[in-house]
Image (tube, rainbow, N blue to C red; front, side, top):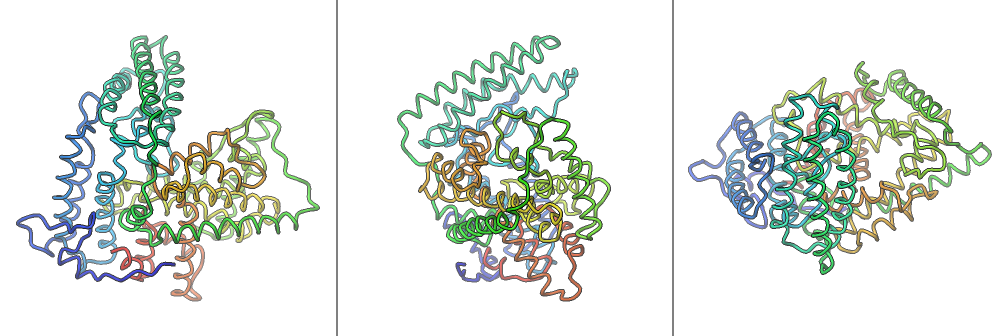
Length: 550
């Protein structure tokens, strides 16, 4: 792994707070090194209000003038943060300081590099269909978009007003987008063209869904669909002449990992990690297949009822295992939320995408990844007491924590004995690891501009065992689009898993014979959905990573 120079905290107090290669100075009239934790909390509240754009009649303002003003005001807010000296505070409060710093760096990176409002037409999604299994939506998302899952159908009068406001905002939003989108990014435009086609088809069905009880809203939806179709045509006309790559480059990638996601692994480090895990997963799969060569092959369920039975049994088996084997404390609210992790039944003969293949061959391995839903339930039932951590982090800063734990749980639970009675399920664990390493390599290579989006898809398909990742399925295209617009998300599954394994090694070394899995995971879950580097600092007191990142 790459070695970093350690930069002492005193350097920060002298104003060496690097942003775009320039120092962010404390706000005029504020003494360097002043401020206490309550000042940080107050600044954080201001920051969260500041982060969202002005929204008028449901339309957020992402115009060039508005973004230029926001960028100038961001510098002032960063200067106020730089004037606060957290070094005398307890580690948990210092951790909160770094969270605020990382979020402000995220908006700074949006302005300097990603510029989704002027560079990425995928940013102008008009509808989000379903909630995520992570704290907030993956990738850059704009404020004010219609989130369908927040509404009950038929719409109540109160919901109908808000629903209609957001539908009527679509035409002026896309009119604004035509003026805002001024940059060349070929792959992003191609992906957005496909996105708009799917949005149009969905809006058509949505209009039929509400036309009987809300004919006025149905008419507005049809108008919005027509504008979406026109916008898609506009994108197509612009994309024809585009040649510029859509990746951000290795230097920007490294800055983003270090200063926003607080990950102590560079682009180069992550290439090595993913290559190693891809090789290991394929090799281990072959050993598992050899060991199981005389066992019958796993067969998918033939009916919806059989699929549901297998799923329910897997949930019960996993929850019982966690409790009986003392892996972690299991509150009553966890089992119901895990049942949300169902992929869904696909009849025989129809296309089964990657996670359909996984779930259909054995439902148990993917339930381990369903610990995502545990995280969401803990946020709801046991929110973190910090006023900063109780607000879910922006810019997907939680990705290595969320995806790293979910991915890590698959292999960790296998090693703990979960699949001893299902030996062929062990094969699926390595298939999933190979798939995630292969998908993540597309993230890295697209941003180094070595891969196009088609190259990333081809690589993921080729390196996923058993042809379980169909090139014409939604999974691989959705994932590679996400990774192109959200650097580091594709690697977070595997890199986060590696980082978590490092944390376990550090904690067991410090605790010695007192170390148990239950004490580790119970402690781990109390720190919130924050970068693993910060959790490691709190759990161990080790400062090497935070020094690299500061």
